View 1 (cartoon, rainbow, N blue to C red):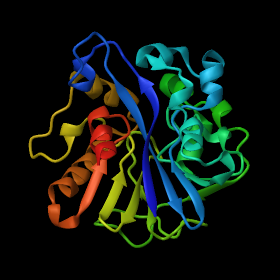
View 2: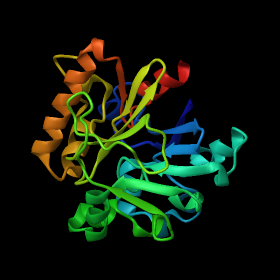
View 3: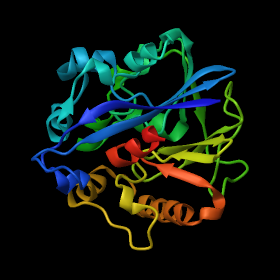
Amino acid sequence: MRIHHLNCGCMCPIGGPLFDGFSRGPTARLVCHCLLIETNQGLVLIDTGFGQRDIKAPDSRLSPFFIYLNGIQFEQKYTAIAQIEQLGFSARDVRHIVLTHLDFDHAGGLEDFPEATVHVMLSEIEAAKDRQGFIGSRRYRPGQWDEVKNWKYYSAGGEPWFGFEAVRDLEGLPPEILLIPLAGHTRGHAGIAIETPEGWLLHAGDAYFYRHEMGSTKPRCTPGLRAYQWMMEVDRKARLYNQERLRGLSLDRSKGVRLFCSHDAIEFKAFTDQ
């Protein structure tokens, strides 16, 4: 199994270091950290970031509220399909897509891979179809996934993973890839755990947003990302509970689990430098 770290979206909200903690100008730099995994069952994509159709017609695909709030940069080079083709593969080679959740910045590229089976928590697709409230009607964009033909839905349960509920035996996927329910940011939000020869990787999605929320007994977050997490959460108690459990996992070096979230550019650089 070979894993590629892809940045499938660039967002530059006003606020600079008040968001990302390192920028020196007026705008921040956030990424959409996705994974491409080469397996014996074909390519597996973990989240998609923004897709080709988002780039070509953003105003008809996405909410203007989030386009301008997040300062989304619509460039073809950030799409998963462009990067996959640069690696020498084609859209047809992507057999499976596993989603942390269905927010607009995680599921925009689904239709770039029409032959892929899409794996997601059942509670997430139900929430995406409800689309209730100001945020719910804008975060979920059915036009990004209304042409998906092959869905696989999962419910929490099964043998636990380091104390977390885990969905194992994802249909058609190698046993090294697991869904880890991490509700709070959305109703059906999940992390994706991948077992590698060097230990476990956990793509925590939007269960946290800032690198210093993990790996420390005194976690901290920038004001901008703290406010954004608050605005987007659907269950504050569950979100904070799962963050605390993830933090405990990040502090326990004996478990050999490396965590990362979707949008921290410093975390992304650390993995690509490796």
